[in-house]
Image (cartoon, one colour):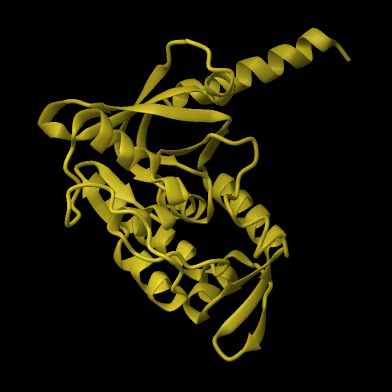
Length: 257
């Protein structure tokens, strides 16, 4: 085996994928449960979609379950998505279904990639592209290690028709819109309202309700949706995350038509 051939194979194939991701239908930021689910449904319908994840691993908060106990809970509606993806679960009591966080995270990754979504990890988003009519039309990328090392390295940019902010509690893309250009979100205050203390029942319902276009060309999904609209957090129950991702894909598809 030739080390140089191996190195060329990795480099050429990666940069081909990165180059293709510079012009997308939908760019998803955050490879957690909502982002992965949205990517799966969009890619299945032949949308050109890529996920940009700042961490090395994907899956967001799934891996650790609750307090590092690698189990998660989903409600009946969320279980329907687990069943669709072939993820095993059992009913703990009526309406509460237990699944392995490891199986959920790895399966979400697998089904999204096999559907045609691209996942580019170790990439951070440091800005958005906003042009005509005040619409988000792209993202500004840099390597996560550049940010970690605090190096002054200029970024690159990609173009897309729709962005989904699935960055979780931090709702990073929405903050870029409001903090860098004083953009007005479709919230009561026009700003990120911040998540409230835990209230699982309300949070699960409102995660889905809050999944919508919050600024022209920008959709919020998952915990980002609750943080933006000032709803509670929900803890280690993930049905709302999955359902939010599915809804985000439908909202995005509607914006593409």
